[in-house]
Image (cartoon, rainbow, N blue to C red; front, side, top):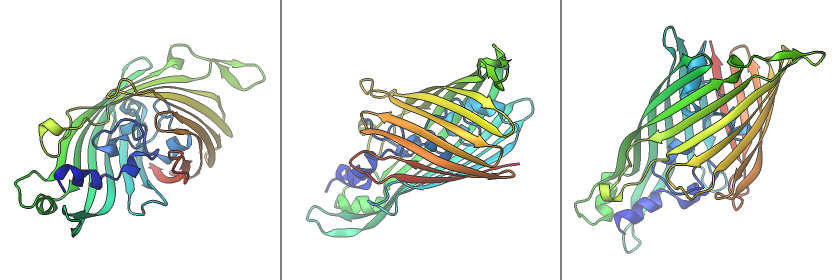
Length: 345
């Protein structure tokens, strides 16, 4: 078995088929963890969140949103990515954001993805041992207001991928001098967020309790700009998941007892120009500061995902717990459950 075959085994093909993130079902890219969407709230809303993100997942969704953070916020998410197929493939997200006087908002996050354990074999099928494959990516982010209603932001990240350790690689290659199945790179996200209500303030419609036009935001995030990642040589490198998100979000009704908002996004790969965009849309209905119901839809023709999403959220004081159910590709009918916790203080 050669090195490339081993790497292919360490990255199970089934994981590239699930709807775990906006680019998974499209062309293969290195560092798949960068493409998985954090935050059960966003997932329940069809993964439409680039304009209305309001917690510490903004480090990933749109760092420009940090420019409007006025609290300290922790966000944590855990999910088993391929239930029914593998019980040791997990994704974890830990994020933090806070307001910084004179700067806007700053944040940091850590992404960890484990592919679980795999068995290494030689050319004769003899087992050589087991190994674990994983990825992690820490990042720092800054968002600030640059004009009335307009914020800009940037996230800088480091990416490390371990497909197989050096001792396993030596065994598989039968002692040949070869690079380990690990790679690293760096990347950047560039975001913009424009609040149209700063330009066109709404006025109340008599008897309806709503403003017209409703508060509206437009978000843009160019993700994962950076060098390719290589595991053997620079000639065999893979691009990280460069992607563009563009979305519009509205809050047509917002009172002390009921709040309703909705968003629609479009995702376009910046690696594979011939791939069709992914369309995401969702809404949220909140009752006071206690409970929320969320619904959405994902249309990903290339990834064979054209299904609804849904979820619930509950809040006690500054603590929020959110749940989401999202689809996989249609040949993997079991849905993925995502849970996240947000704490504001």
